[in-house]
Image 1 (cartoon, rainbow, N blue to C red):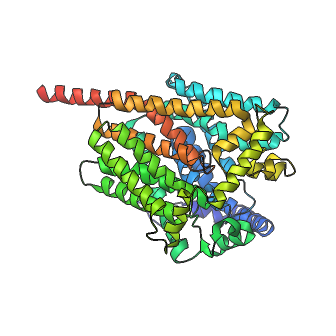
Image 2: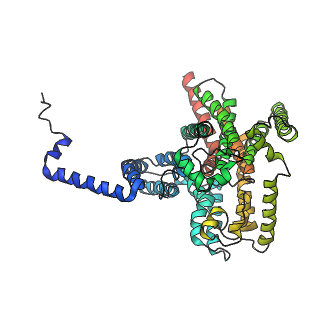
Image 3: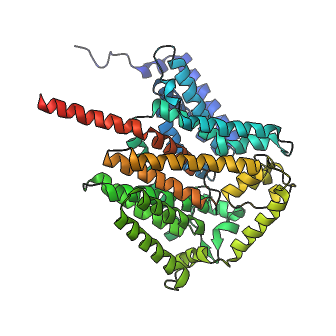
Length: 493
């Protein structure tokens, strides 16, 4: 029997002077780094064990990298309000590249199903990124550095995310993990937004508002809630997106269980979060999302009911004054006013761009408009002409050719997905999931005319993942049918 007092333990090495001195020197070095670098260095040092552990898991199990990405995708831009000086956005790029490296090295020891990525959606992603690469030699482009930062959300993430889904995140359980993570993160997003609305912003958020955020986020003395997102526009559209996706899932979940309750709660709070964001254009997400859902159901009664509900919403906001005393309702009502001053300003900007773009079929170069244009080429015409819309931004930066290609890709994905849902899928619950993803995607597509949300975090990665799962649906449906057939054969024997 061992004596506890004689067993050698890891802490016993500190009894040796050399180890104790080494530990002391390390602690002094860390203290010096924190003193010099402040909170950035402190957070960096604290995160080292977590980062090393995550990297280890990614190389062992590449799909873990995707789960980490979906988590960071939601919170990473909000982190910049609390910790300055760290390019958090580039961590997404790093993890994506790390996943591909993990798969490459893994292929030396076991078979990696690269052939799974051989499909039309991946081809479209490659073509779109190829056009983005072409923009490097666009004679109108002023800054190649701006191209590097801006092209990531426009094309790079789409190129990298979609093949990974087909290769390592292609099972039914992966789809369920994705949806549950999205549900929890969307729920936390609304809860954080409610804290801002009813309790107030924290000191870091207040500093962000005082630094210029108040110009767009405090209107008539009222806060446009932004939660832990980059801005209220992205928060509103993303929560409307969640409201559509999880609303459809909750409606189609036959049994009352924890999943149905979670999805129903996320849907209600998601739509509420959209309202308190004050983002008028986001209302297009549920309107058009649920409109597509009624069409995909192929049920005349549901189509009629959906049309009546949509008409009721239109009449409520456009032709009545009910609830005008409520700031949130009144703010949303302006989205239905064709004479709204904000709309007129946007239309005037588009008229200016139309004249400028007439001689520039390839646009002014990726990164030449919007925030990136203001940062890298602040004295150019495009940098000083607000685009306001995702599609107007694509048009301004990549020309009418780029806009045409982009719209073709989006509607090809939507059209093929709708065909698969309506005529190919047999499993009801899988079909409901695909209807939810397609409807949410269509809602974002329409809302992106009013706001530049499609390629921003977290919406961009959610859209690209949704596209991949929509194209995976026939394979998932066949797997479900095979499982059912095997179960029936087992029962009969």
